[in-house]
Amino acid sequence: MAVTYRALSRLLSYPEASLQAEARLCVEAIISEGLVPDRISGSLAKLAEYVGDGDLYELQAAYVDLFDRTRSVSLHLYEHVHGESRERGPAMVGLVELYRTHGLEMDVSDLPDYLPVFLEFLSILPEAEAASLIGEAAHVLEAISERLKKRQSHYRAVFGALLSISDRPADKAAVQSLLAIKDDDPSDLAALD
Image (cartoon, rainbow, N blue to C red; front, side):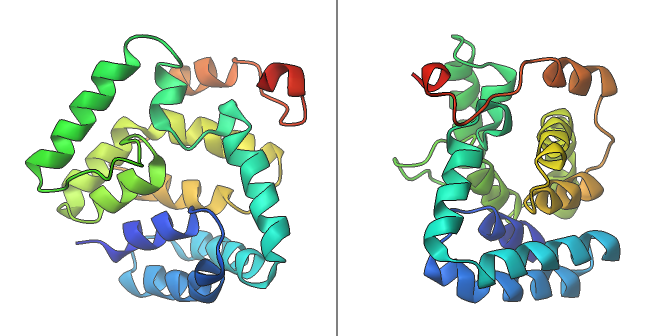
């Protein structure tokens, strides 16, 4: 079981006082497990510092603007692949079934494609299987990472860590296809409507 996936899930979660207290411990756990290269661990440490030392209300507002009001960096993986199409429903059902086959039952408040939930699931899998599932989503993770880089977001470090663990590189054509979709502006209230 990989502690790294749980720690990355936690770092990617909505900022709360408990996360502020735990952020640096998450990075220490990631470093001690040794799955993530040192240069990325350094970036994760900067994320932990940002979360741990920031004003909680400002962190929460920035998180909502970034991940909840901006579809192009949504933490719901199938949002990038299926959008609002009918294919998203069966894909979600398939993911729930995958979770169940490994003994994980979903809480009704969470969607199965929510990245922190997915990472919790990966933490119970053998390392090779988890790396393979990350590889299947690598193109989505790479596209989100590129968009976070443009925004100079500390959260990009989580995506760098995941891509470094993946058993394969992201499909460049698939990444370019996702990046070709217009990037959202969280302050555009008409688009949000």
